[in-house]
Image (cartoon, rainbow, N blue to C red):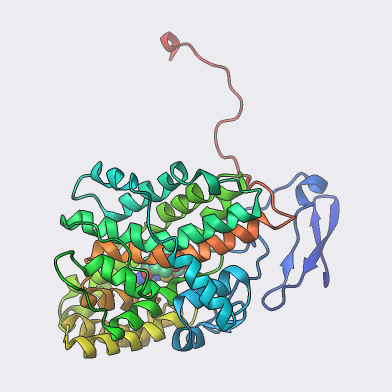
Length: 427
Ligand code: CMC
């Protein structure tokens, strides 16, 4: 605690403790506010509210900084691997070589799913959105892995965490295979986490699948860039669901449902669809004008962020990865030219400059994923796969937090005051 904030409400004066994080803004502790004044605070969208304390991820939106356990995202994207970042996020420190080998071994030994789960897929229509399948199948894991649903047992929590991180690529690849009518491909534990996912997605039983190291590295980097992002909507959903004591599989399914929305994880799909709709560079001004028009609900997808008021550091790495992947695959996608030009025009336009709207992580990711061969409907699934690491880390941190309580916001009631029931014949 570094001081106090004095608040006066009517004839009451209250001194509220001010808390200091290791870095970042001061936080006024209002926990006693209601008890001592009978008043609530009002903060729709939590724009000024810290919902928890966390030691996992730090974002400075004005600087455009993203740190995982203190390490900058660009360093992790360049030098680390997704599984190493998973270790870092879930356990707090970078692993030694032995620790990473053991962790990779454990994760790879959990990649298979219960055979009965395959039947669940067959209950979905072939044209089901893979995110709909993900919500259902991940929630259903709690019906298959009873021995890791006791949240009060640290060992069971750890096993559930490993299972979720390990099985997500299998479940995601199966959602894709089901949608295109191809047989499910079982995991191959001799491959890397990401190589295995690529094989389960693009391999077929009739042929050997050779993992392209450039694509494997690009995909791994995309996973790193999506691994965690502090108290975003889906992570807060996971924490809120978990605060009631719900099992981890149910909590992660709740996170997946939240991620699906176009303002959150669905934006990468929406961004690519938008770029395709724009189609050619000469049509950009028309779309910029629509984005600025107050009477038009259209927004530039992949632009703007609640926290970043500077360039999203993930978008920089993503743009570079897009260059590498397109060069490697020999793809010259006109959509990439549209994206670069749109970014250039938007960043010099007064409206976007004034509102501090910069490209976010989703702006370039769709171009890369599309070049690799993923249909747009799979984009958010890939986000969910990677973000599972963050969800699991944040969920575990919450369960272990002695200050954790069931999440239960209050409200500013604007409905009718008390009134008596009127019989239907008198209405
Ligand atoms: N295009 C045009 N105008 C925009 C955009 C945009 N993409 N984003 C924000 N604005 C305007 C908005 O109209 C508002 O203007 P005014 O103050 O005149 O009413 C102002 O900027 C502030 O917007 P806001 O909606 O109050 O800001 P927010 O923090 O609530 O929303 C956001 C953040 C990400 C939902 C929003 O920027 C957005 O809808 N972006 C497009 C969707 C997108 O790319 N989402 C991915 C986010 S990054 C990945 C993730 O977290 O999942």
